[in-house]
Length: 515
View 1 (cartoon, helix red, strand yellow):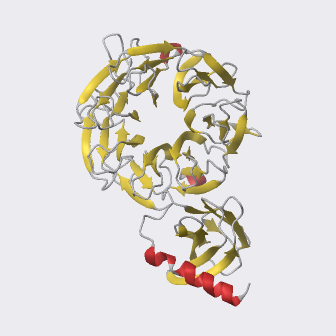
View 2: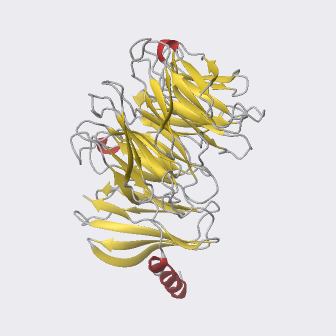
View 3: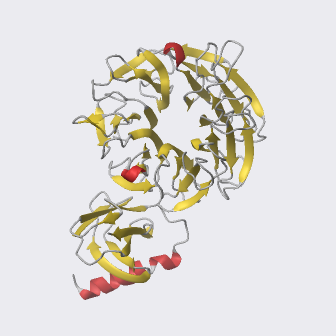
């Protein structure tokens, strides 16, 4: 490289930090922690609409084991997305309800101009029997209860899974799906406006149909959104999922796992994106029990909504990772115009749990979020936060239900920012002679991109170690073998790129430790 080019790049990239004003992507926006001992705060989490009128979407979190006020009655909290301050607290009614086990963001169903939400208590006891389940629909504007709906049979578990769906009954108001997987299982569709039952459907599996649910979008071309429902068992030790017409409830397709590898297929489901660009929305299917050569690493597959053949599959790394325990289409986190995917792996590296962000455009891994401590089940729950930072990019939520920072197994939820440049590494700790692989991904191809060391052993510096154009997809990689003599030293790196639309952009700092 010519020294003049290096000098120009140094000047451009070293100057970026002087004018960067938004939250850096990959970085933690903040954390939510309202749980007490063994509450499992973060049992569920999602972004909801702007309920406090400040122009920023807010956040709903469940704590299903909260003793509020009765043992394991459960509790749900609404937080400001702008300040993370607590806005609303909602309590379960009876001991053992597990209120907050599931939560769901709704559009405005009560007509006050503010989006609403649902909190489920799938173990709620009704007059028809124990654990029939109840869902509670709340007004985002007032925080008041709009309605409740109860399961109709003992051990039904109404509210085990839920999904918002566009207007099924053509009344101009969004509707919602709720599963009750007990006793074989079924899925109910309710009117968002009135709460009236629109239809009930059952599945192809032998047990627990509706254990998971996801709205996909219109895959059969009739103008009405369709949905997927997973069954715990399709028979012979394998799961399955059904894709069901929102208009007619006919089964569009049934996908059965292959025994014995696919025992957990459809234990997580996510819709909301056309990832192959064919104009038909696709479906993301997690199988945390998936076997690779007899080892239970887990997998996640994106299925084409047009052909129902796999578009791509990702796999976990180690035995017991439970990669695919959770999955969410979180929106466009990197500014390339395509929704991205967040995948939870609640065991993961050194039992710390992981949440992986994947590009919906290239299917490359953008970043791996990891817990600070072991045994928290970080990644067991995840959610789309909306744009909390005001930069036009999607942010994400990751729950760690056994986190004990606040109290023993109280739980926490972390919010992380999206960004137009993500830097990722194949690890965080390395020994001599290990090979480090780093990759950074932008929204578009860039004529100039760099990787720089910005800190060594807590001493700031700026040393460019790689410089050049990205590939056509906006990606560039760098690899190096760890030399001897770095034991006990931390080195921080940052990536930079000249985005053709946004101008100079930078990643968050990634710190590598040498052992």
